[in-house]
Amino acid sequence: MPIEDAVSKYQQVAALLRAAIRSEEFEPGSTLPGEPELAERYGVTRAVVNRALGVLRSEGLVRPERGRGTTVNPLPIIHSQRTERQDKARREAGQARGAFAAELAALGLESDTQSVVSQEPAPAHVAEILGIGVGETVLVRRRVMSANGIPVMLADSYFPWDIAEGTQLAEVETGPGGAYSRLADLGHGPAEFTEEVTVRSPVADEARKLGMDIDQRVYGITRVATSAEGRKVEVNMMVLLAHQFKLSYTWPAG
Amino acid sequence: MPIEDAVSKYQQVAALLRAAIRSEEFEPGSTLPGEPELAERYGVTRAVVNRALGVLRSEGLVRPERGRGTTVNPLPIIHSQRTERQDKARREAGQARGAFAAELAALGLESDTQSVVSQEPAPAHVAEILGIGVGETVLVRRRVMSANGIPVMLADSYFPWDIAEGTQLAEVETGPGGAYSRLADLGHGPAEFTEEVTVRSPVADEARKLGMDIDQRVYGITRVATSAEGRKVEVNMMVLLAHQFKLSYTWPAG
DNA sequence: CAGTGGTCTAGACCACCAC
DNA sequence: TGGTGGTCTAGACCACTGC
Image 1 (tube, chains in turn yellow, red, brown, cyan):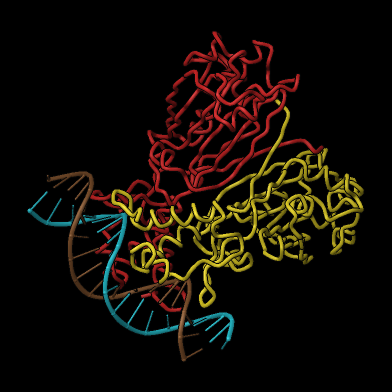
Image 2 (cartoon, rainbow over the protein chains, first blue to last red; image 1 turned 120 degrees about the vertical axis):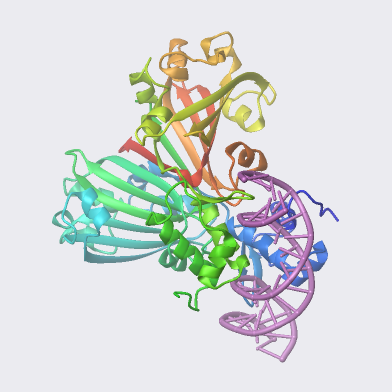
């Protein structure tokens, strides 16, 4: 029995289970023994096991479900190349769906994107960035991206209405090269990108859409695309499961 | 009494306390009422209040301390301009301590950096990136950065020994413009940077150095600086309190 | 229906801090 | 020494799943 003092029991149980998962004693996608059995195995009460599993759950290692048991996260960490996405999208024009699909394919994962396009009044954050009035019309493209059927990312893009109106940006399929190629066709090709990254708890709506637990964390990423003329031509507000992504950025020395 | 069903009590208590903190009913730096008092106020047991505070603690909103009470996080979110740090450092050559100090000054915070320089065998990650053998000598600069006396960030920089040996890089004070200026003086000025960002639980050592709770999260950022000749001239492994930082990146369209 | 995990209570013991 | 938060037990009830 490796259960000692000085560190709390639930932390020790969490560490043991974490090690068992990392060593693939419990394989990705498999189901752990029930909490009562684990409690007996480690000589603690079920409350302690439950709390230990809560730690692993918050880290995204396991997903406990009432009635079904606790399963090990089947997905590997996705490496998202933030500064190469737009390039890739262009290079692969006509081929796959773009950067997200390519990044998943590199891991042997299936990708899926559900898109909804609509015309809406601009929310305050977006209006401020785009330099328009709150409530003025914008084009919104909302996407839910999944890996092997598991939703891992939300992305809501906002375009100024005077640019997007009546163009292919307002269609579900944006065509070869994606939205940035259409912006370029329209004379508003992005020349510079900015991303702001925070880590936070999900709001209820995000947790529901991503099928995640409230004690897990998300990246909130806001990307702004600026044209050569200095106009903000897109605001993309993304929400990613924090434990599921590695982000990488490359830039030249200033 | 706004305590209802459908959502768990501890989540409701957490939401009420979160709202009270955000509305500055409890000001930054102030101490909350004790758990027994909060339990009575909300009509729940102390266990529920304790768990609710655990939620806020994991979000970095409060810091409960045994014997002392629970205080509200006194620090605002620090906006870290990742792609402008090197520029700034050069611009302000001779003035303040560089990007970190400038970012804190913008928020009216005091900055402090504790540095230790040593000569060590290269750990595996670092050796692989620098293209040297594991255990070969590297110069290591370890820093603990604090805001208003509270440690918020660790940064360990590794330099190839053949570049750094006997230079000002091996001194505690790197001089005007910082380490990157010295690399440039030595003919190894960085031409490109890459940062990889993950979010994870802190290891015990990191949690101790940062005075944080184990259920909070850190950014793990690995920055690699590459010279014009394509040589990796620095690896900087950073650990930042995740709830305390917003990261921003700017880059030109490819 | 039996088994799962989620939550809560009541009570307890402890380490720690300030006085 | 009294108050703080951290943890644990024992037991209970519940929502949910799958048979």
